[in-house]
Image (cartoon, rainbow, N blue to C red; front, side):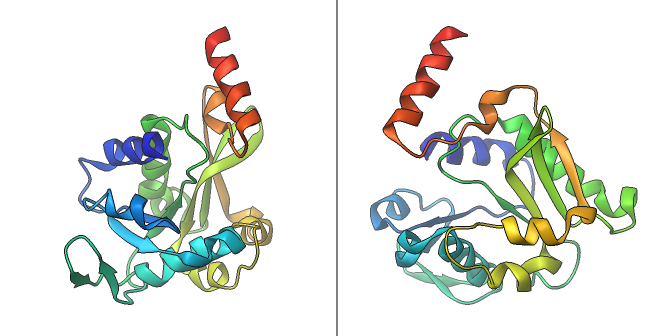
Length: 193
């Protein structure tokens, strides 16, 4: 997760309109990162939807204790204005800073380019769609209804006509590492390059 978090921090370091939330079931991970908003999600083992909902609860302004600083913090009102939520999972270690920046740039221009018709922006390689994904804040109610380990797939299916893409140049950015075998395959591919 460290590489992805560092990549995300690097991608948004010059933006004043981005806030990074780190959602985890592991207190030691959260304690190691006082520089971001940390959201404890003990039910994440029950599926990705629990992490998504925990992050959204924080975004909606419910008080989340930042353990490192013993303070309470409220985030901006996400129901006003043109706001987006970027979902980047920890099991995609090779997503590049430029991909995240291109997704954010697409979101910055979505209202102007599509008259508000784009509400989902996904990364894509050679026609294969994947993560990271940006969801417009207007989709929060649907994201809050997710269950199990499906992530945002059902919301994406329901809004295909409102989707745009950012193409990535290398397939490795889409690599998903869920097992030790996945990691070994990824390391082998890196050696072959």
